[in-house]
Length: 319
Image (cartoon, rainbow, N blue to C red; front, side):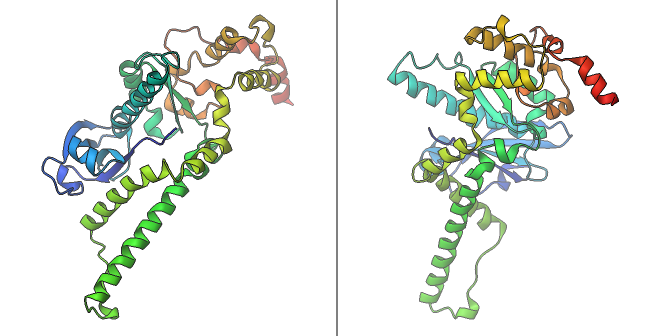
């Protein structure tokens, strides 16, 4: 297990707004499109030489109108970060055993995201389904991010801790060099100009990724364990979840007809998520649990409606 490279979003319109990596042709242009809110975004990848020898921990650089990510940077994240990561991992697994998984592009891979607008944008989801049909989206429901998103369970805090340490080391080294050079303490300066800050941030983030994949790896695994998401692939957990759905939401669900074997589990899940593909952003953002899975268009919708005891719901609301 390892953490994939990062994506970095900054404010700007041309490659000159990106950090100067000190090498000619440091970046290659990959995207230049308007996002769903009407502003333009530009995405780049580091050149092969820079990516292999220097900025190894950042695979995507994006420029937006306000330095925030959007549905265009989400495309770049999939294309330049997620897809190469899945490809590498699948090749590593198949090099050990061809039975471990299917070939890249055939093996279904899951991407877990929250309900930020760049992930639930209808155009982005349609693009993902068309260009990478083997990727499935699993959304952490609204207001559940602190509990259900490993990044918020400690991984982001871990990354911030590494950055604070890198900044402290840089400042201490800077001060010591100035003192050794004869600078008076009251005349010591710490650069805070934009080019210096951008360059430092890119260097430190890039260095943080391999550190998180080695010395901090156990901590990241604990963050996954804290959310319980790793149990979602356990069949016993899946069966338990479906039974709880029956008790809490779907009293009319006859589990005996599905037998809760592998094929039965797939039918229950398919019925729950069948029409998730066609809902608006607001509806997607408000759905709990299984119904926010991305599914293949054309499956039979609304089967789950007959599992609900509508009469009891009506009497409860009128009371």
